[in-house]
Image 1: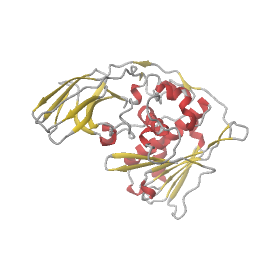
Image 2: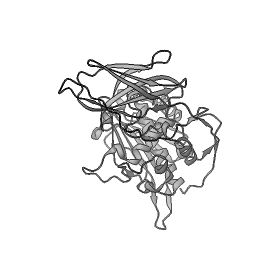
Image 3: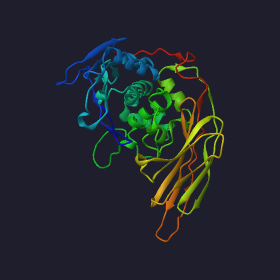
Amino acid sequence: MRKFAFAALIIFFVPFIYRAAAAEPRAGYSEAASVTVGGMTLTSFTDCWDERALHELHGELLENFCGGELEYLSAIYLYPGAPDGVFGNYYEDIRYLPDGTLYFGNGAYIELFRADLCDIAGIAPILSHEYGHHYTIYNITEYEGKIYSEWDATEYAELRGMNGYPVSFAYTGGDGYSRLWDVTEIAASDYTQLFGSERAKAGESFEVRPQENLDLPLAANVEGLFGYLLNAGGYTGFEFYTPEQPRIVGVSVEGDRVRVSWNGSGDYIFYNLVIYPEGEPLFAESAGTVYPGGDLSAVFDAGSLAGDYTLLVLAYDEYGWVYASEPFGYAFDYCCGDIVSYAPAAAEKPAALHPVAVINSNNFEPVKRQRKI
């Protein structure tokens, strides 16, 4: 089970996984409406999600990129409230059989909470993230022949550059665990960034923090990741070109105000300068949104800041993809009336890749694979 929760504008994913024997609704709720589309049942336990709204929700699901794994998702349940303080759960149906082969069942399902808010725009990011768990867990597991607790020895981990990061490949709980470094959370976020719907990537939260862990390269910055996830889903026939990455080129201080300048390219429709306390990307905030056609710089008031911060320029293109500059460290020290800046050594990152065509077009050729049911 994957758990998805919000606090203010901060997205929290509380990671637990349950293996589902069969999709089943929770006890204690009265059914308001139910529809079955293409073998998937969508059931609402709140009045505002009637049959028409459930069909609209299914349409929103299909606005995310879906492959053959879709037929292994049997149900979506919508509930009022937020039990356990979460916004969504994902239940997988994959396990090893006694002979050591992997079993891919068709009993996986998703739970969506706070559906009584009756807002498809608000529920779209949660749906995309939970389906991201389904897409990545099913497809990477089948492609690599390894369940996610074994993903440390996979092409995905190598592409994502997980060596050297404190990535968790199995939930163990306790003080040493962080959802920011949970491999399945990283993968689900990769999915939404590269394959999510327009609604899933709309709004202030995504514009400031397209992935929960900004200390990792964004999905679009990882060379080969888009192609890998398509291949894992059974698709070929895609092309890329490489846009110029945004790059911070200057930081100047004028009293309590800081100006940050960067280079860009014609590929981007707007930029967002993001700042957060070093090592705490959950608290990222926008320090300025800038559109092409003028000076690529933003000025913000640093009078209330103290300590070490990370500056990052996020660049957004017309496809909804987001690219990040190299992080720039900045120390705000007012003990002696000075601001002291520093720029840490930038790690070498591969060039990002960009799809020429929208991924839901007919440019992709599905590859049929045998699955055990």
